[in-house]
Amino acid sequence: MVMGLMYALAQGILVGPLTKRFSENKIIVAALAGNAVGFIAILLASSFIGLLLTISFFMLFNSILKPTAISFVSKNTTMRQGATMGLVESYMSLGRVLGPLWSGFIFDVNINYPFISGGLIFLLFFILQTISKVKRKKGYLC
Picture: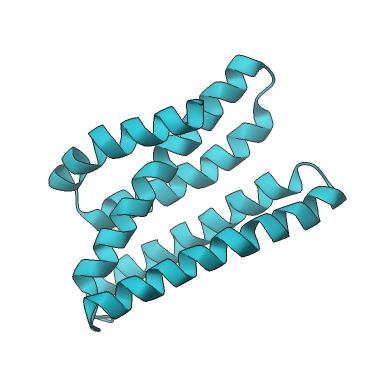
């Protein structure tokens, strides 16, 4: 319930004003960092209230990331928008299939590994997005 409530509040209230105030790229970078921290913070929760707070923190950034990233891709595509959005949805669907398979597999090895793995994946994407942003500013990328 907390996850759904945070998702609805963030997308319904925060995404619009944030994108008007900050660039989509800045929001994406911040959301990737927040997701990485959130995944690891979930592991550190030692009480039910702590778990609710860390899940809320994670969901806040997770719910901001998706619509902002989709909007960014839509506005910056060099292909037809319909084809691009189809590819985006395909990759998102692939993630919804591979993510649980991967997490279930490593959960059997260690209960903490899915969270560590998720945090590392978001950290990797944070680094890649930050590098890409720097290269775009220097004119290396379109």
